[in-house]
Length: 429
Image (cartoon, rainbow, N blue to C red; front, side, top):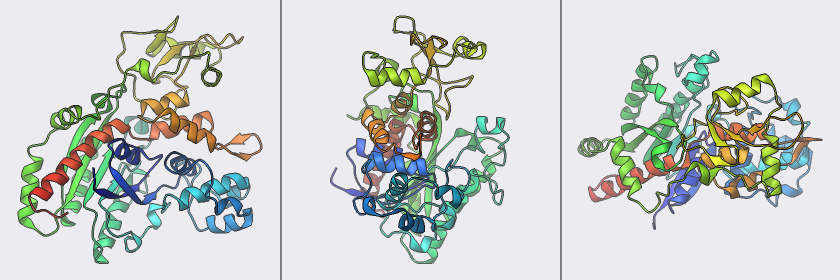
């Protein structure tokens, strides 16, 4: 594909969007990202740029880096602002990685502080996958029920910051992005949240966009994971009412089945099985160590986790034929329920005879590669003595918060087809 797409990723996480476009051999020029979670954006930098600090930053000393980082609203958990006094205790090695992750990925960091006037020109695709904890069933169980209500100060209500920025771009006479791509949970269509979602679509229409949304599942795009999501593609038509009508008519011809079938006909559809993504070669010392790290102690509560959740692999490394997909990968595997368990006898006294998915496997089931995991581990510096930036649980959390790459490939495939249709029909390009 000859065209280069200028990309901006809001709530960019570890970069599922960029990975999906790269997998489709789409040339991208990342104009900006926006992510305040230091673990996520350092991992993004390691995966998409380099696990080593930028050469210029690698020679900077701690006071200089801290002075620069003091200008940003950073987070250590993706939910709450990080106190500057905590940041000052971090090693210079990790501070260099943090600053590199901001600089190399053009990271705006805090979407609440981003003004549309400072947005780059010529954006082709702007993606936004705002936090879902106030929308999902898991979030509701933990008391997060403010949804995307305006003024609620919930994490999910950060959606409206996207609208603010687009409006500020328009007010500053900046060209709005040609395409917007939203990803979140299907709960947006529930009785509780749908009125707000419809207001959001109306707001986009006032800005000149036509939108269509689809309920899709990662399992339909070649990833053996049950992960239903809601995706919405918005096309900028400006004030051209005739073109608005053309895009509305075009979207009427597209449904979820069309998106799935079209992607499956492409050369990029390469389905994976559970067996393909599990790493059970325990003669490999690294893989064995990763498995041991995810083996719980032999306690009654942990035995229940084995008994009450899918047993993906049985004794003797036998893949259980009863399961073709795993459960949704969440931000934690040492829990009941979880995504599924694997029989594993570590030979270590006091350990159970099963394990959870490893951090590597969680990333693989999200559509990332072994190479991506290795790059994250290469960037795994100590922020305090004995404490590493990317612990087991941090990587699992990042995987659980990311978007299935193959699912994004499917919706980006539709975006490319839509772009082709626009050009053929003299639309805005």
